[in-house]
Figure 1 (cartoon, helix red, strand yellow):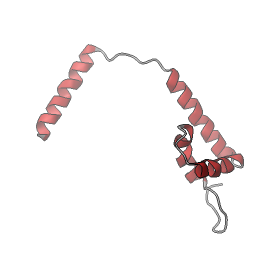
Figure 2 (figure 1 turned 45 degrees about the vertical axis):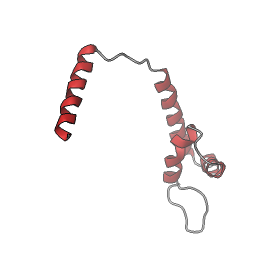
Figure 3 (figure 1 turned 90 degrees about the horizontal axis):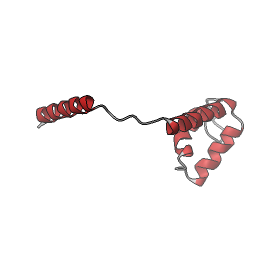
Figure 4 (figure 1 turned 90 degrees about the vertical axis):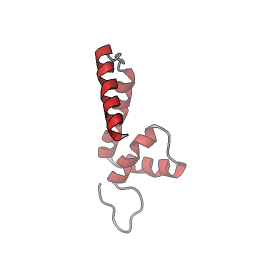
Length: 88
């Protein structure tokens, strides 16, 4: 899939992929969900792409957060203060 025929309805792969993040966040309308799921039902590459999105979301949710070292906090603060003073 990829391009859509002028006469055919439904999403292209590019359009489907553009909706995947919102789909996983439950941020699509019922119509968009229906159209996306229809596309996914017949498109193995987009199903694979969705699977990759889902795995990434799961893995990042499990990743441990590490506290920023004090030295890095200080350097970041100083950098931001210098950048703000130049803009002001």
